Length: 253
Image 1 (spheres, rainbow, N blue to C red):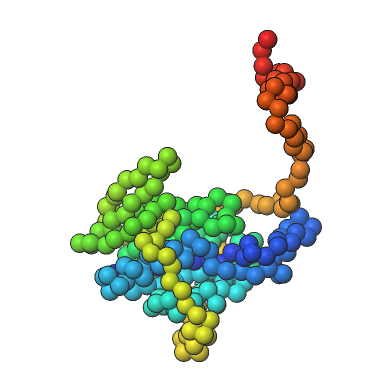
Image 2 (image 1 turned 45 degrees about the vertical axis):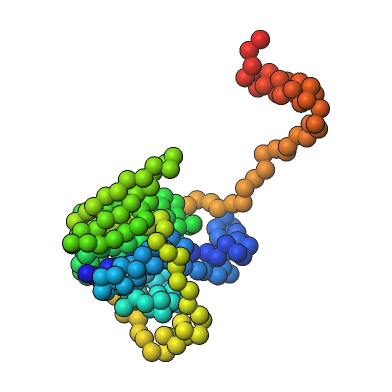
């Protein structure tokens, strides 16, 4: 079995995000692997340990994804592929999905895994978009992925704590919510060792003309008002609540 894991790096939220002229100052940011993509990679590696699958980590080069891909190799991926071209951090999800789908179409993996979302997504729909372009089975918000008898078994989560168990034929694409185990840790020394001994495979990608959303402005939340502190006198608090409801015409006499 061949498993492709679609990955990306995202801003490190440990650092303060800076905004300049209505856009994020990406040149001053540090980037880290998307935590949900890391979950997808771990699930792929668990399947590899169980089934002997080949795991390919894939990322579009929108800046510097080398460390992300070398880290995937250090964790146990068999190949790391960088889709290269004239791309930058403003690449939309639909453009990214087109590039990833083109790679998967050429590579023909049996199973494609990716994170269910990323912190910098506008729509969190990479999994669905890629699956739609490939015309293969898809499910998102997925965990507990197993492969048996040529079929993929998994649990899909729903709102309200509900869950359902599914079985699908391959090829299929899953948006991973959580792996069965926490993502494995590798030291910086091991990543550097892999950088010296392994090579990234580069694939040329051409961004397609696809409809996409345009971000007009990014700005920090603007305060619309301030909280009112009413103390702990129950009667006074009750009177204040009634007054506020009457002022907003939410209380009928």
